[in-house]
Length: 358
Image 1 (cartoon, rainbow, N blue to C red):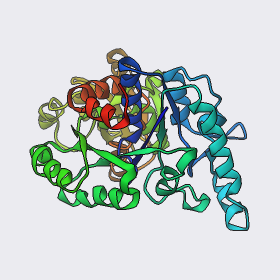
Image 2: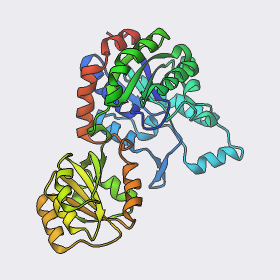
Image 3: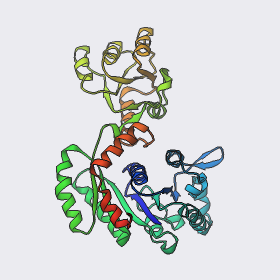
Image 4: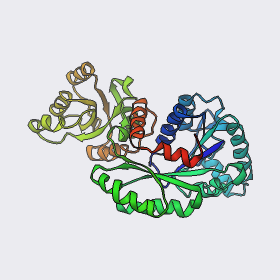
């Protein structure tokens, strides 16, 4: 039995996507695959119990029979963290993790552990990534670091992972590389990391679909009311455009992008009409200004969601824009797109060799 610990150096690096992509491909190629998320310091309560949406989704996707408390044994809510700060003991969490791991590892050839959001998270319970990976006979995990690449300064994230994890680190994934930096990352960055003893399993380009958010996430973030097509909450929105120009320019502008959200004032019926003429997923109307009945009717017919946001346009833009590239990886369209990307660019044979998997 082999344990692969997939972690990241910062939030929204794509480690959940990599866990899913690896798990699905490994199940096809060679072996039975289990999954655990050992430590979560951002747990929320659902029906009085700690709850992790990612774990629930992957349990269903992989068809895992283990209960949630086994797949996610250490769920720390703010209240539990406060209790630790006031004299609680972390020993219980270590025991809980080891017991859960023994249950899962008995049933699979490979267990994928999804790590924390960064290399620091978990020290309060003595289960930060470097500590967890080095639990010796209890886990004996090999670590794979996923790093979101922005520019050459991102190299420090790879070197930090190597310094913290040492020989446990068997390689990295360079994820979400902007198009302008892709050639540099494929050549100079890859060569540099390999020269430093850091194997590179994949360099993955940034894709608009994988950066997309959902209509529901935008509505929740803006505290907006969905006036038309509330049934489209799970639809993906790939980009955000602002309708603040004259109507003559609007049509040409909006035709540049498909599957977009358009933010404009609730009183700009001319801009709203122009957006509805193009490939638009939703209209975000600001200032709590209701659109005309004619606009709502056209949106209903065109299959475009319309939401009413209380903020002014500038504030709404700032809030909505923060969701792109930071949306949870829980949509089937994203999974299929990422699987295709992994098939094209991830060196699975090299990984299998390092894991000792045939």
